[in-house]
Length: 232
Image 1: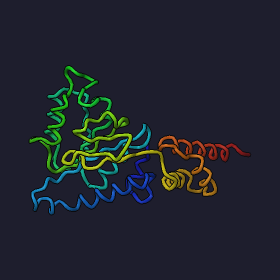
Image 2 (image 1 turned 135 degrees about the horizontal axis):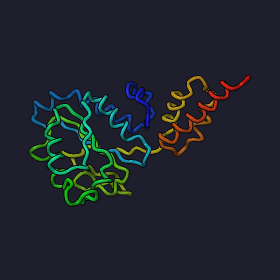
Image 3 (image 1 turned 45 degrees about the vertical axis):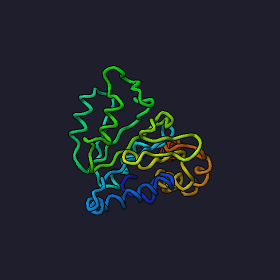
Image 4 (image 1 turned 90 degrees about the vertical axis):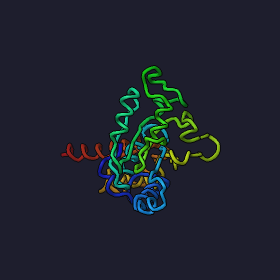
């Protein structure tokens, strides 16, 4: 997981360029509420973050909350219909609704977690875009397995560009292994006084997600620290 300190400075955040672009888009959108209201357009945004485990999707979702100025409300789907409905009805305006790991609950429209008593897909979709949906909110859904998303949310194929479902999901964002600039930002954070090591670490971390690359840098930093403490 990324450290909380990164949630306050986005230009040097350890995220890829496409994620930084999402921060800019959401920041502009969050300042446009009056424009939407004047035209009777729902002031909502829906974003799917997908990528391998350890890529920082949950932390990026929280950073999106910071960008938008919306209060983060994590909503669990491991509950009954009644519990889910009550939770959604209790969410205030200007909230970022975070639903993590939707693939652990829904495979397409099937609730594979609790098919008898759990939230059904129709109730879930209606809460997002039906008559009871919030019209002043951001929705962020994370998934490790985008191929399991129902097209009513987004169609993410191995071939071709993702197809979101506007009104529910406006954008689909891949959160993958860190690009070189993002890896460099991790190095600067973890090893600020050892710029001589940054280049080698950036090269060695090719293809690694944030969790793995940060762990690599922390190991190096700790080895240096213990070596310093134990030398005569």
